[in-house]
Length: 147
Image (cartoon, rainbow, N blue to C red; front, top):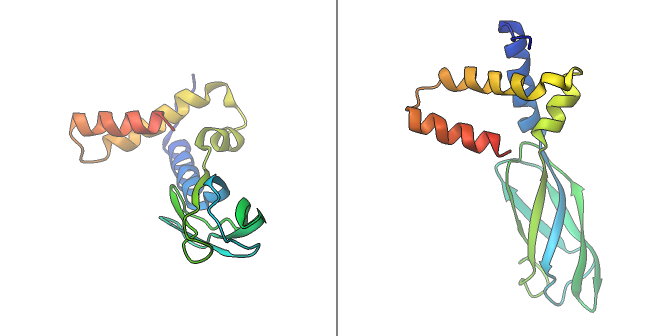
């Protein structure tokens, strides 16, 4: 396995930051379609990113069938969806974030045979530079590995 030098590690770190910065809301699922909604009713998206917008895409008898994401926004790692400004306000919706870190890194690094080990190396380098206790570092590493 080829170890990354300082430039390689820096390139991976920049790409990881770019992936998180560009992560967007890619879809909205419906758990409960509520009642009294109309096509075009606004759906409010909040979270740690910005710019995402959506609206009711279709409904049957006032019950939401689909949500149309009109702008995915950027910088999201989580998003909350609220349709209380219209209809009966009781629709239950959930956002899907377009954040496939490994697929994006594989697209960035054409030689994906050693992708996981390179990614682990970048994470290890990043974690050792943070003022974390060994327990905190283990928790952060476990969370990142779960991505």
